[in-house]
Length: 453
Image 1 (cartoon, rainbow, N blue to C red):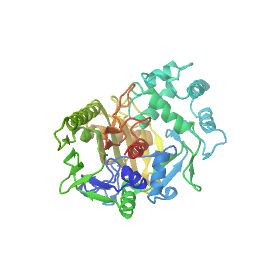
Image 2: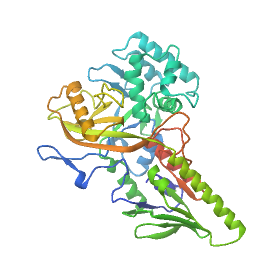
Image 3: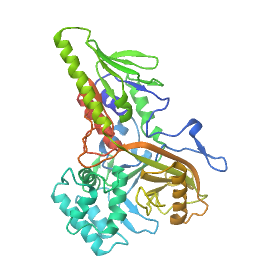
Image 4: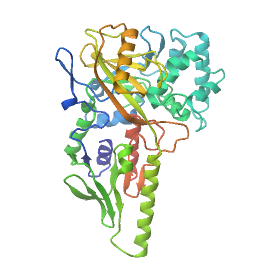
């Protein structure tokens, strides 16, 4: 939907083909036979994963506002907080607009509870060095190597309580395997950038956590669809694109019940679906020039599909659970977690959905870079929640695992380009760009694809 809105803003007429009967992709409300109820029969609205935004997601926030979303009403704004149930860890002050960029981050580090002065000094020195270096490093460094190379090195406590959970939440890749350059870019925008001015009345601190107070379908996809139709566009649900054919007459899209020609096509599906997309290049003319163009276009399509096939993926699991009357000390808490591939404490964060519009006692546990079978993971998370949150009656409601939630954001990764061939473009959080697989990365790639039309 982001590409369709951006294209309409640029003066194009957009038609959206959506294979399912629900908008939103990996960011939508769970409905129909997959919807859930509590033990007492109370229906609960669950998303197919717990998503958050940050103030630095400027393009996403602007696009939401364009389609009529009231950001103040739709999002709960909090200072960046990575504190544990015992209140140790990092918490930035609630300064929407600090007068010195980065001062709130430095203050948060200096006042972090449970850390020694050695922990704080090492992190402050490292952050200062990263900032002096323009938040740039070798493309081949991992986050773990970056932190070990700092002088002094980041301490084990700060690695376990800040770097690793922040890296997992932002890149969905363990620090030992994650790209240091992408991590630094996220760190720069989130903690060491000016406040984001959305309009004359709305300003967010770049590090603000923005938690949706409505289900994800109504946060952007549904308002975007309504805006698009109002501005002359079309949204076709249940229309799976079966093939895309190019000839000298243009691009012809064949869907479930519709066949239509367009001047250009922007693909906005998952990378696996895009790699398998049936894209046929055939000129009606038989002259040598046409044959050469056909050969070049086929080569471009093949090269792009090969770059998608080279990606590997990481899963994200969200375990929804319920404890009657439970209310956490903060809407979001960090949890003490084991390594992603081992141990019995897999969740890194827990969200109290009762504090942002959900049922009181409904909690969402997030496991980034998750491994293992669904029931085993659910059992481990419930035991972790009972122990770390002191909730002996905690019961599972539903566990949702997106097995190919994001690409593995590894050092030196060559991501697919925005353009496959002239007039055939692609957008998504996996497309080449400075951000990892985030909502902001997807929106920025959509805007870039429209610029290339």
